[in-house]
Image 1 (cartoon, rainbow, N blue to C red):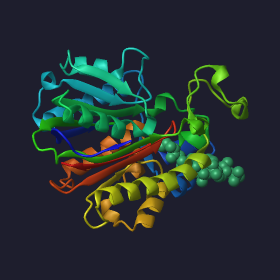
Image 2: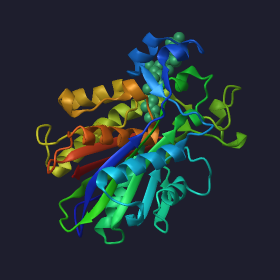
Image 3: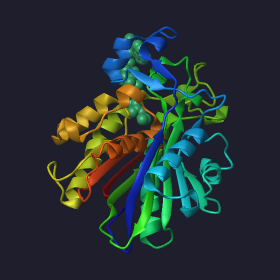
Length: 334
Ligand code: UT7
């Protein structure tokens, strides 16, 4: 599925993010499970991650605060929003959506509000949906958030997965513009549900595939075939980035920042090297925040936006892959 600019444009007018205060280092994990700082850093690039105190923090509070900061940065009131979208797989309740509660919290009601479940692609998918709603005239000002409290669904006894994840939220405010050159100028969203067993969060025993029916599978916790996802990610990342550059006629030189989902530093580095992109075009913060699923791309965008590294007029790219399996790329002009 792809689209080019038409109708209205969509400007990014502000960004925000939120991470919990609590820092959990590799050393702290190594004191609890059989792992080491060296193993985690060499295999993933992670040194530490942020973890919610789930008594009073979680996906909702991070999403709310990230959106609040984005609204402040944009100089936009909550009541100006006519749509709120949250990309997440860790909403506290199946109903209402995180978006509904966030919308109420920032004073956006009666704005439309819904969550998007596309795992680590949640933010990129949601940005694309928001852009499309604006372009076709159905929305004017949209709050988009990617947020995941992965600590709430990680099995802390499973060293194959728990070392990888962290908690974070990132947000952007999009506003209608008369010039269709602004906003998402190219996108490619995809999914392959045939590979869902590579990464899933089972709620009932009957959902657990036969191959995983051992006594280490915990209901309500993320189960991942790390090697399978790694193989998929390395080839898919490169494929979607090449596709986006080819279809837009952009090159390594003319593209601005390439914001990758912070899955694993080795996956990002493999794609960067294959494409021959300069180091300073590919932001890395996984060393500080781990893999925060739907939160990661929005968090990177906010860091780059606030540092003035998203240049006006120069297209930048967002790219992600994750559970589903899903993948997504978007080329944006801010
Ligand atoms: O964003 C969502 C999508 N998810 C991802 O992007 C994850 C993609 N996958 C990965 O990032 C990597 O597969 C992991 C970081 C999860 C694992 O790295 P790996 O290089 O694929 O390790 P592995 O699972 O092949 O394990 C290698 C060895 C094994 O020992 P043996 O069998 O060779 O003796 C594991 O038991 O490392 C062992 N191991 C560990 N050792 C120390 C696995 N986890 C750990 C650990 N600490 N935490």
